[in-house]
Amino acid sequence: MNILQINGSARLTGSNSTRVADAITARLRTLHPDASFALRDLGREPHPVLDEAALTALFTPAGQRTPEQRARVALDDVLIAQLHAADVVVLGVPMYNFGVSVQIKSWIDAIVRAGETFRYGASGPEGLVAGKKVYVGLARGGIYRDTPGDSQVPYLRGILGLLGMTDVEFIYAEGVKMGPEREAAAFEEAAAQIAAAVV
Ligand SMILES: Cc1cc2nc3c(=O)[nH]c(=O)nc-3n(C[C@H](O)[C@H](O)[C@H](O)COP(=O)(O)O)c2cc1C
Image (cartoon, rainbow, N blue to C red):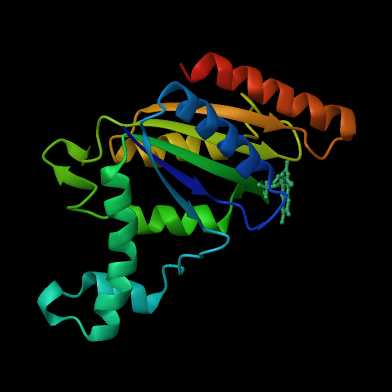
């Protein structure tokens, strides 16, 4: 079994979403001691944003790319290969300004590639990244779970589902900016969710 953990916080230390993701991975590794483990910390090793140069590189046929374009596409290829190699994916996702961090968005922009991770068929898009279990560790300053204010979970369900990743469990650490008691409770609740969901 191959576990891939993606840390999406901008913080290099003290990240709450990384704390939740680490707890998910720790339980997985306890249950599956022989599992291999790969980590991509997007705060420490940022992935470039999808800009004009990247789009041009991606839409240029492989044989016609410049060395710079090949190098840019290769950065995305690494993330796609890591994803394909994983059986279980653990994402640490902070809430910044009601959305996912730019780190997570850049990872998503890298892995969503027509012909590689999904394709358009006669009946619409078809995911090519099937058979994976995904755990998403969420950290939020406020509380949004199961409310219309939660813009992250519907987005992540949708984009992961496009690629065929439909077996997704969300672990919530919410209210981490609502005082020390609520913060402590958030991690206790996340730990209980992990114990119930990671089996
Ligand atoms: C730039 C920034 C924007 C934030 N925006 C929100 C927000 O829109 N809603 C919210 O509930 N918390 C917000 N927070 C609080 C974070 O969700 C909280 O600090 C969480 O721990 C972030 O995850 P991290 O510690 O892994 O970076 C924000 C924090 C930062 C630094």
